[in-house]
Image (cartoon, rainbow, N blue to C red; front, side):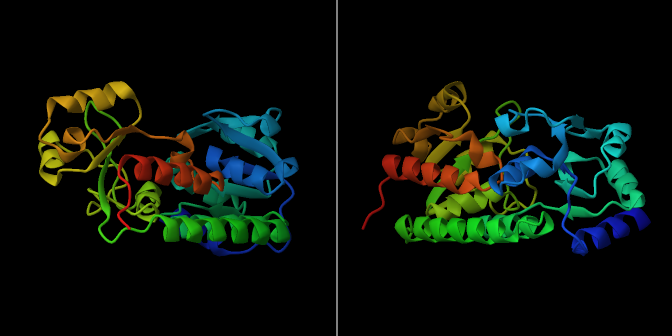
Length: 269
């Protein structure tokens, strides 16, 4: 408990000086650093996902779910960028005891994401870049909300996995991306970020659109023609994998999601 409280204190405290040796503990946070033109500050990152060309020479300090503490300490970081779920609780406690300043980021909405990008800019000594990037993203986001607003939101089921069936709950930032596009996650009443759901519960909620990662997952729904999405041919592959990677590029990925939903179910104006 003491370690958790210490981590929270470090997370909230702004550093006295801008960081010069940064370790990113999530690919999305590494991407934000690159977007802020601060890749030169990164001295360590977690292994996982597609590595950005700008970070090809940045050493790994572990993988998702397991930090190599010896490697982490060897690069002598003065700031850790943390996505809480990427590090187990026991290692988060270890990090707290090390006394290295931590910035923890887990946005649940696109507005929170943009605020955090601006805050990370300040942590990195790139405050101007952070403000400019945040302003650009806020303008893009407002334009999407205006363009794709619907009086009656489109009911969408977002399938994460098929066996067993997983979706996204209200706490997941993709639910907010759907809202920006004039849609509503049919499982937005569930608080868990990635709940397991039953087939029967999906049928009862009768989504107008089903989004999934690949065509095979979508084709399986054709066995249920009573579902609005199946009956009207609104089975869509997720248009951009960046939608599940909360960095600045997620606003552009949201725009592509909005375009795909609009194409399959035009807004009545």
